[in-house]
Amino acid sequence: MHTLKLLSSFFKVNVQMSLAYRTDTVVNILLNLMWLGWELLSLNIIFSNTTTLGGWGFGELIALLGVFRLVNTMMMALIWPNTEKFNQSIRDGSMDYTILQPVNSMFLVTFSRITVWRIWDLILAIVLIVVGINITGDATTTLNILTFMLLATTGTIVIYSLWIVLIALTFWFTKFDNNVTILHALLDSGRYPATVYPVWLRLIVTFIVPIAVATTIPLQALRGDLSPSQVVIFFFVGVFSFIIATRVWKAGLKQYSGASS
Amino acid sequence: MLLIIKRLWQVNWAEQWQYRANLLMYLLYWLVSPIIYLAVWTSIANQNGDVNGFTANDFTTYYMVLLICDQVTSNIVIHTFGYKIQDGSLSGELIKPIHPMLTNALINNIAFKTLSIIGFIPIWIALFFLFKPDFSNVALSGILLAIPAMIMGFFIGYLLSAAITALAFWTTRVYSIHEFYFALILLFSGQFVPLPLMPKLVQDIAQYLPFQLFLYYPIQLILGKLSTAQIIQGFASGVVWLGISMFLFNLVWRNGVKRYSAVGA
Image 1: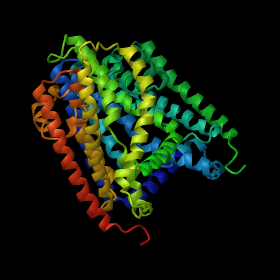
Image 2: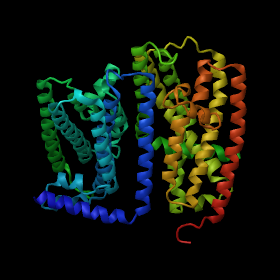
Image 3: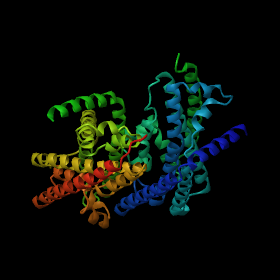
Image 4: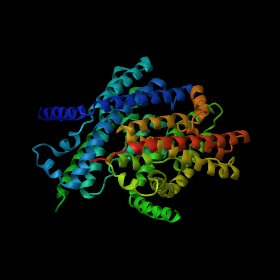
């Protein structure tokens, strides 16, 4: 309850901040629509030359685009702005005040900045997923859709956990401004099924920077490609990565000694 | 003048060298998309035998050469210059007797490119062994022709980006305008896919735009896919676009500087 209250007040503060830049919001949404147009055009170009991509149909790639945009929105609306604020607070020592608050510091650091207009992007992502599933048609069962939703959430948690670990490293190496660039750089790989990538690239996006865990794998669940045991494994990977991230964050906090000392 | 350029080079080289870790990250960022497109299209070509006559090896060689052309012809002037107009730090440069955009910022960009190409070479070699492209059709003459074509492409791209950057004299939303320009490059340069695979309309428009001179044209030169007439046509349109982009840049820059009143004035 407490957490929800905090979240809603963070949201209110961020809405107020963004109201100062109304025209920018409109411009950003227009640009966002432009990129959506480009993404649909590029899928159209691909599918005018082939019927399947790595065995996946057009509808599945639309749904994948939706899931990709979900992760992308998390990147743009939460990860970028909060990381920027966090890096700044480590450099100038204002992290002190964050730690002093009687709230979980990890929560405070990762949710205090929200790029509000991206809510629009979130809606668009969900529309794409629904449309994609509809194009795919009768092949999808309710169970498939449920495991898809479960694994999409799990994948998001995996990315969130990796983010925590990356920014926690800043406690040890103060000048680590590039902490999330690697995540951002590989993000684009989530647009297409990882199954079409060469083995080395598939290994990177599955195990090292697990973009595919949040994009390709939920879609595989939707297609019914995953066995029940695989679903369970991915679920526990999500749980464990979150536990590890929390541990690393706590260890990092112990390491932190303020900017002046 | 030569001495000035030498000094500017030293300063800018030192500045870029300081950010070499950042640079590696940028490099990674640039590499990812072409590698993904390569993987996507070779997978389609392998599955169907070919895509409109393009074999898997055609795609591999295309994107491997694209990585090189992109390194040479792209620029980062919007990021290194845009903020100077906005926060007023341009004032100090304007009183110097050299052109801020055509000397200092240009040399800064070239220093950045030189450094990133040094970092890029070993990565390209590693990718070469991973993807094993068959370059048996590439002739020395194509590479020799592509060098001036890429330099021309770089200057056209630089002047156009510089003109857009100079719009910061009027608007704070210059980054949004640049994002739109970036999408045009993506659409018309052959970055996503070789232009013949784009919709007919896009191909037709691309003929009248400078963007294919950044990537598609030099790539085709290196791969030896162009007839003599096409080669001459490409260079001719390059010269024309060089003139147009120079004119556009001067127009925006002159009017912008007249309008410029630094923060605090």
